[in-house]
Image 1 (cartoon, rainbow, N blue to C red):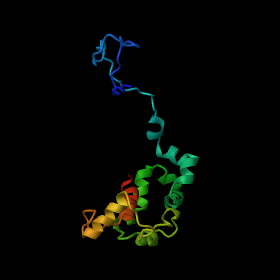
Image 2: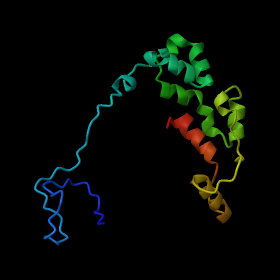
Image 3: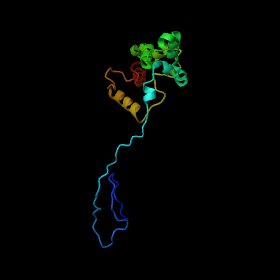
Image 4: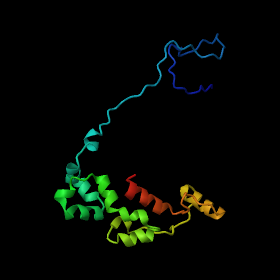
Length: 166
């Protein structure tokens, strides 16, 4: 049994049953070239991305799933603050996270925020693979993973999400 390699170029005019007399190992010649083309399945994000802040805060899904601290800030002066974009409000509400030195400090700054309830500086388990294993390997060698000299991946991620909106 001969297994031919899989390629992305379609082979046209190939005989289904090759001639037994023809013992050459050459593949049939390609007469047309049809490369795999980009297929646009029309994903439409325009309605969501160009939504005004008033419409964003008016959606039930967004009201139920926004952070509690952000919701409290919005409800204090809804008429004025509903015109503020959500990313800007997130950065404004969680501005103190930028100066935090540990996850414990983040929990102390926002004690009523349920999203921060399970944050711990000490990992619950040792990881053998992935990014956490690389961080532990760097610690053993006395090197730091981040430019600022800290190895706290949780704090790094919290700062990225809540101050930069990434």
